[in-house]
Amino acid sequence: MAAATYNIEVDQGSDFNIEIEVKEDGSVKNLTGYSARAQARAAEEDSSVAFTFTCTIPTPTNGKVLMNLPAATSSSATAGQYVYDLEIFTSGDSAVSRLIKGTVTLDREITR
Image (cartoon, rainbow, N blue to C red; front, side):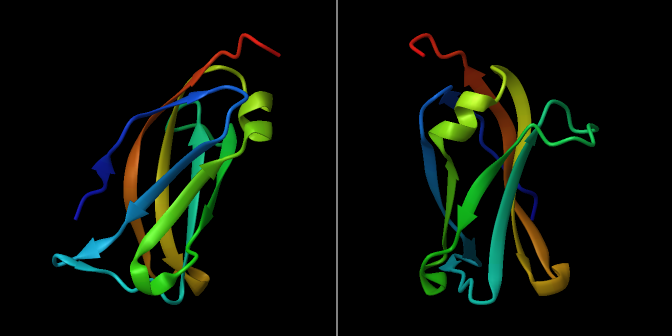
């Protein structure tokens, strides 16, 4: 299955959080043994990472992935538009699934 497209906006200098529920064949996927990762780049072909989201799977049996961009990270990133994706993976990348992808618009912080 192809990754869902989800475009996000983040206010520079603010925390951003999203919770994704992973389902497989209509049922919540047990994410035991999985980790998650998400990065943003200026363009898909760029080799350098603009910023990295913090991703966790607190309770693997409920199928939820938490994706966070802390205020400190959004403050230090340059305002603008980026592309990102969120993946789940097992040890050694033996199984990798891209869950969502899209654009991240980082809106310039005014109060700083």
